[in-house]
Image (cartoon, rainbow, N blue to C red):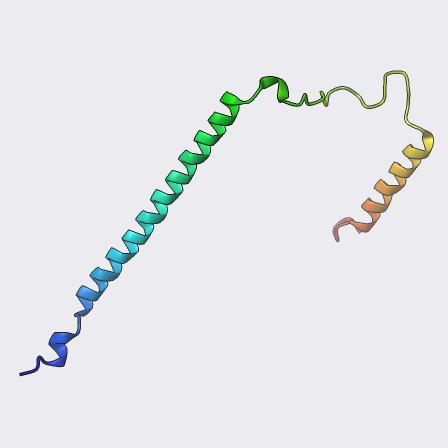
Length: 99
């Protein structure tokens, strides 16, 4: 005697429960992978900072210092080019309200 078709097929509740289990397993595995990735990245960062030579770091210049030394001014041709570029930009990028 063969079982009926309705007894062979999963009920909708069982199918939904199985889908939720599969979804949670997927989300859990992705979460664990990302946590391990963050931990590995932090360990590598710590190891590089701990075991590299501090003298090998490049000094970053202080940006608060002026590029042009005190008492000197940029060439007037540079100032004219900058002013022209700013005026052109403002002319090309006016909003509809200011026209």
